[in-house]
Length: 206
Image (cartoon, rainbow, N blue to C red; front, side):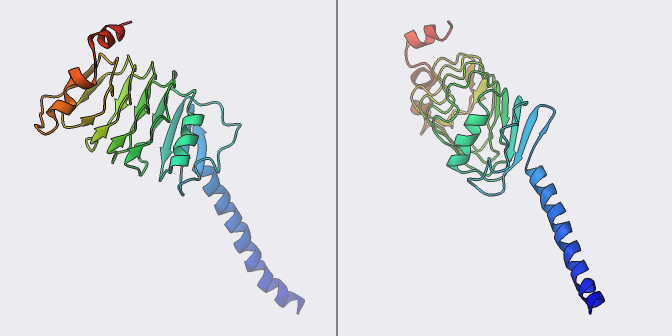
């Protein structure tokens, strides 16, 4: 009877052990650091920091993959505040919420989601050292003051992108392609939306 019991118990025990090992490996794969880069594979919206440890402080770059919620963006803005670059190319979202990366003076590069359509108001305003904003061709609109005073930003946009007021105020290295959309020509005119006045233009050089 005892031998029969152990024959039944042994496979069950092995199954449990293997399950724990597999689960442990999966958890490690969700959040790790490689070459000063924090890599997060998010599985469920709202759970971005579930596997994040406060001891993860030795990183300059962040890569996030998977779905993200508004709460996840709030968490990302917090843990990226001392970072030089953020890459969310493989994040399944179409909108960047307003104001979440505002005032991040360390940020130099931001790679946007491949299916991005909208960037919220003030989302990157006063990111003084932001040089690269890698926008996909799917971008449709950038709301007011989104990149205001990102003085180092070097970017070329299509005139088909709808711009809110002051979207690129103070950004003298932002240019527009020759493609025109007559329906949006007034909205996208650089003189009306990028530099709202001569005073702002002069101020952007200082």
